[in-house]
Length: 100
Image 1 (cartoon, rainbow, N blue to C red):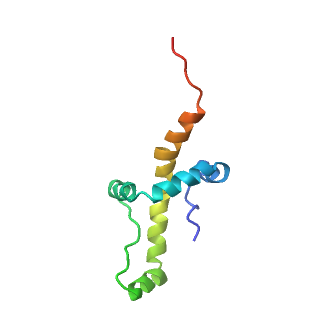
Image 2 (image 1 turned 180 degrees about the vertical axis):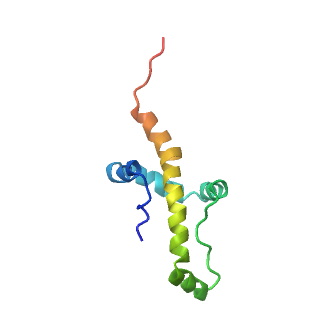
Image 3 (image 1 turned 30 degrees about the horizontal axis):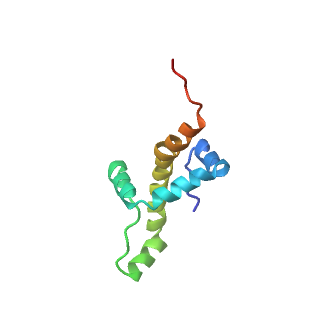
């Protein structure tokens, strides 16, 4: 399943052109508190953790897990782009404004 199919072009281009975006995404995915609060605010969630191997197989076969990941990443990747990547790296790229 291609999780990037619903992403805007500017975000796809950031993936291709700037490795810092991938780094921001990796770091954001490693921050459990960020993900939990994102899920709460945006009303999306990662697939549940299966209680057994049978449940895991059913989730996989029915497409439940893939669909949950698709919905999650369709919201999370633009969130990271707007709220982490742009804030960190555009500020470093933009020239300083001299006042006075």
